[in-house]
Length: 84
Image (cartoon, rainbow, N blue to C red):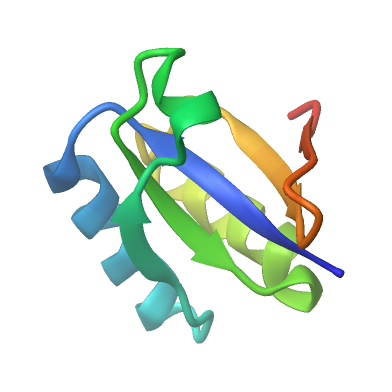
């Protein structure tokens, strides 16, 4: 299984994006970016369940949220960037 991670450079844009998702009915949690993602300059992530990933992407795009990348992060620790 996996989760979608949307990465952000700072906490404020991540908080804004979380509010956009919550308003749109998508649950998301803010956290510090894992080491392999923070090395790319991203300090925070929004974690979204797999069944809500595409809806979350649409909501964030519509709101012009400042996310940097979208990833699938698997329980094994493997990371896969999603082309957006």
